[in-house]
Length: 225
Length: 225
DNA sequence: ATAATGTCTTAACCTTGCCTTAATAAGTAA
DNA sequence: TTACTTATTAAGGCAAGGTTAAGACATTAT
Image (tube, rainbow over the protein chains, first blue to last red):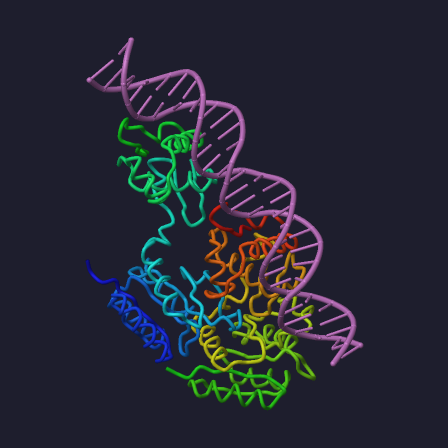
């Protein structure tokens, strides 16, 4: 498997070195940039999986860089995390409105940073908010807002139900075994009875309609539009 | 390309020097004025791209100067940013309607100022000082001045409450996990109990109304207008 | 310095509703 | 039919969040 690419942007060389050292040690392919403009250039070439952006930078600050990254069609899906000093004016820390996926606050602790970066890359789809095309199925899932739309009617589901639906609909038509479902929605180590899944499926059928969920006896369930 | 012109207006010579030094260093053509009347005269001659206006000035204050600038057909499209002290009386500013494009609050940090000025000139439009349009939600957030308006009634919130609100409202509808919130508002390393978030949410609901803050059990909270 | 005020955090308890289970019914394939 | 799997239902436990008050702490005023 290829190394995952990270673009690190900060104007302080010390920080740059500290962080890149720690990330490289963990097997990431790290590139650096000392300001926003260079970052944009490098990003277009490298197509990183994740961009770590300091908020406070001369020339072009992190927020602005973030906005511009999001405007580039090739880069709009990249994961962006902002690095902010906790004691900064809140004005600088404006927000997720610039399109950032996460904040990491200084002072940076290498171990915290690394685990955070890994978590972000593992999810890999923070912005992939909407799944399952509305058109055919009449059902839309918005993970970011934790909402389900049935014929454009918003509907909030409890956590487990939502996650179960999200899983099944992530590959419409494909059969998910009970073991599969347990491992994903409940976790490898959690032990629950088999009936638990049935009940959750039932709730989903109740709320969304029986037709969407097909039972494959002895195997599992599948979602079909 | 020609230098971009900035007109800086303040009655304190120290401030004038500090700011103009920093802006000139960045390649701007800076003129200064020590009060509103002079500012108007110079503005008509110089036709600046941006005017930085101190609010507190003798003779003619920033608000008044701002209004007069806007009335001049030749200057009505200039970008105007007001310089304000954070703990000033904000009742007069509550109007916001004097026509300013942005606020920058004192004490001035050169780096912040410079990047802000650049952002203003680059986008030719106000920055994100104000979020969440009053129109739809009835709630306006002025991050720069640490103020919240509920139906145009100014309201000051304690720091943590404000930051929590600023975070949630920065992406209305989006669900923020508790971890998310802790990392952003409190910082990665700070350890506080889970109930702390609840209590702050409660305070916000108390002050702004229950409906704006929705709980997603097992996941987090979201703000919706 | 001391007092007064206000903010942040915690602890204890309450409330809610999600999750799970158990028991029973209904399918489905051999 | 028999054996097995899934559907259904209701109920209880339990975890997550809500609420309140009080103390710790910081900030500002006297």
